[in-house]
Image 1 (spheres, rainbow, N blue to C red):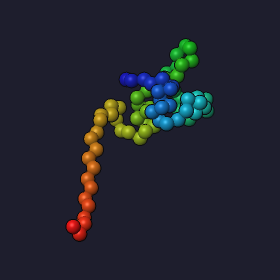
Image 2: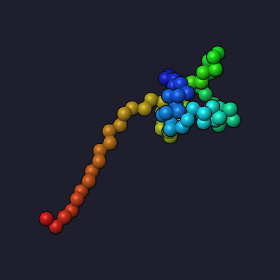
Image 3: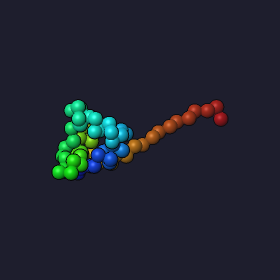
Image 4: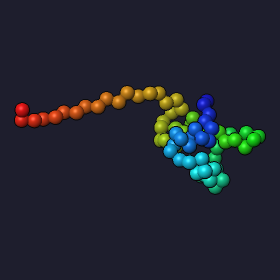
Length: 73
């Protein structure tokens, strides 16, 4: 399983590091692992859950756009 540092996780979810620390403190989002040096790490599963993605492994998806324009010409 992949783990993200607090900075990486904050960037991926669009929040600040301080917000993640506050969430950890009040119990809203606890880090998956804390080292002896108090570094917080978050799991891929937590990222998927936060972003609303299903499954543990997220594979790249192709997005196809279609646009049709009608005119008198």
